[in-house]
Amino acid sequence: MWSFARSAVRAYRSSFIGSFLIVMAAAALLSANGVLVESGLRGDAPLLTTVAASFAGTAILVVVLVVASTFASALRQRNAQFALLRAVGATTAQVRSMVTAEVTIVFALAAPLGAVPGLFAARLLTPVLESGGIVPGGLGLTISPLPVIGSLLLLFPTALLAARLAAREVTKVSPTAAVRGASAESAGLSGVRRVAAVTLLASGILVAGTPFIVPGTLGSAAGATSAFLLISAAALAGPAIVGTIARRAARATRSSSNAAAMLALVNSRGFSRRITAAIIPLALFLALGTVQTGVNGSMVDAAGMQLRAGLGSDVIITSPDGVTAEQAAAVGSTPGIDAVVASSTVPAEVKVEDEDLGGLSWEQTGLRAVTGSTSGLVDAEVTAGSLDDLAGPATIAVSGESLFATGKSVGDTVELRFDGGAVVSPTIVAVYDRGLGLGSYIIDESSLPGSVRPAAADLLFAQGSADLAHLGLRTVSVDDYVDETAAGAAAQQELGAILLFVLIFFLAIAAANTLVMLTSARKPEFALLRRVGTTRRQLTSMISIESVFVMVMALVIGTLSVVPALVGVAYGMLGRFALAIDWPVYGALAGAVVLIASAAMMVPARVVGRVRAGAQQSR
Image (cartoon, helix red, strand yellow):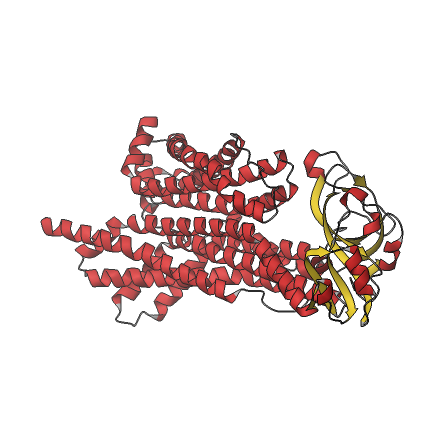
């Protein structure tokens, strides 16, 4: 069986090369992210753990879909071979064993070649991690075999299951029926697949409505996942959708004299599963980039809106070296300045789990430490308690999102840990809504341990206006301060943007690879068309129309899958009905879909067409 599997790998090397490359890329991606997660846990860098774990959820989902789709597409092309094996006496168990052996061979070679370089590629992110404040300077990333093992344990069962399911259609029927059906694809869906598609569709729509019930970042993050549920529903129902659209288009053009268009539409109808396998990676590529950039942009916009609404001051007073207590006192006594509040950001860790889970029990955060009465200067949109009570000892105000699902409210305590080991448990005296703009925690500086109290404030919120140049201070308007803060928040998303780009690049490779693999496998079809009189120009036109069909379907499915999510995100983050989409990014991704579909289908088709034409002339 193993020798037969090796022969099959050599005979169908074009398909297996595509699977090989995808496994390499997937293993590298997962192992690199595994290094970030492990480094965050072992190096006591909870923010790195949070960012890497958040990315891991999306990456795992995407990788599983892509690897499964790639192996299913590669093996579905060999239905004729499996049918012939069944016809000459091969049992179902033997065919499945052969498939298992082939998948094992590919993984044994490709996975280490991708996973091991992925371990060391993660170190390329070290400058970004340090500049963004995600890890302390000098923290080395942990390199161990665990990320490699984890990626293999995830990828191998996924590929094996997809490969067995792809061969199942042939192995579950009689040998004669397998031979008869090997050259055609049914657009019909099984009962289980139909139910699964409808369930995912309904779930995606319901999840997209989460921000209408749970506003803020939590609801928006949950709502954004609806795009993946809808894409998965489209993947399951794809053959029926593609077959129906292609059939109706073929009927509409039946009276046309364009033979290439008719051939393209009939091909799309007859091989709807193959076309779906080409469409879904492109749709996922478009959806992922669109929804992630939409969420990130909405988060920055919402933070700016909340900060602008939450500041009742007339000016913001800053200094490159911070504002000292003496300077703050001088500002407060300056004619024209009616009230002043000093504000600083103090790094800390908050305990999020009562159980002892090591580093996972604590989450890195930032406290907004204030000095002075916030009345009239800071409007956090308090829903319970009062910010005036912060003047009391060991008190804190907490955003509603930070308390979500904790069961805590005014009167409960929050356990905080600071660098150096100091631990305090201030009492919650206020709960507010504008946590995205003003921060998750507001605390009076007097409630902080003396060892962590800032020597100088980051800035002052002031009512009134005066020339403070003689104090070495600079005044800026609230609008300018909000714009600067929003720009800084966008810059802090650099790591997330890099990880997103890597994932999108992986999807682009996967989509191009699938299209090349499917088009290259159509050599017998192209040869037959040439023998019955199809010209090279007609063949090229047919592939061009098919590529247009693929790109249009990918754009429609990818766009429709993100619309519910982005409408929910806009409402949850910005409080209005809109479409939270970054149009320049969407345009670039849509252009990439067009480019990938065109190049990945046309180039292999032209190469195969030349080879077949040359072979015919030589005969």
